[in-house]
Image 1: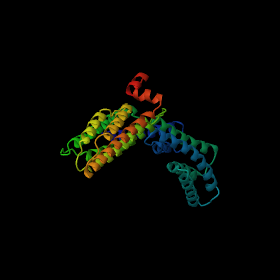
Image 2 (image 1 turned 45 degrees about the vertical axis):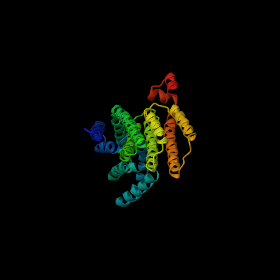
Image 3 (image 1 turned 135 degrees about the horizontal axis):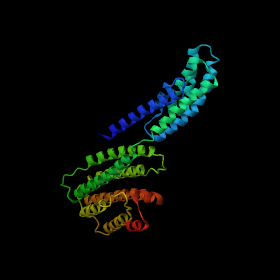
Image 4 (image 1 turned 90 degrees about the vertical axis):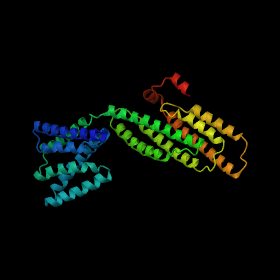
Length: 343
């Protein structure tokens, strides 16, 4: 069963059980309009935990507004349909202006209850408040159950997949520089990888929003870093295919790419790779200058390729340097001795 199918079944189960339980609680407390408690739960359970919590807070705030406005409109405007229409107009305007449009449906239900009896006694107000509290309380409780463990494992599998694909693409680029006659088009693979990483960013956002623990967004930052590197590889790929005749230095660059690709790993800080790249640039600068215009243009493109490779490595180094000690210990399980060896 696919992950999306599992998520759909889990969400449907939470909504069904949560709504039923909310109705049961309202019935046990002998509340009027007990079915509405289940409806409020259904309308409050959203895809992530943090979204549900925020929506619950908005519902509580707008509920007080609804009680006040229904009292003002329904008791002072004799025509019921005009009173209800005026209230809904104001409710929509205020909710949308505050960015709380998702609360409109529940507040409309509460308003309908008040309109049906025109009773604003303490008992009725208490009844409506309890319906909302039960509905949103059950929604929060239901959304505590989430498959975070498997979601995290899947994100880690995605990370390994991205690294492996990047190594494959870099190998194909190195092969092309060594022998332009080789058929190894990396463009489609690169485009496919970029599309998958964009989806992985969304998956990482969903994972972060489904945990109440303090979460630094590590997985989001990781996949966004890889997305930036994909953009660099696009440029590098374009530059390679502009070379009309491969100079001798192309093989040196290809050898460096094969060396560098072995360090496309999550926990690698590319300090040594950047240092070796600078040495390579200096070495190429000391070689015999090109003798023809075509050689000059080809050599210039090679330098552009080296600059792209440097940018590729810098994205990873910035990502690694942006992690604090707590993050490295949590995600890299890194000790000071291990970190010294990487650098």
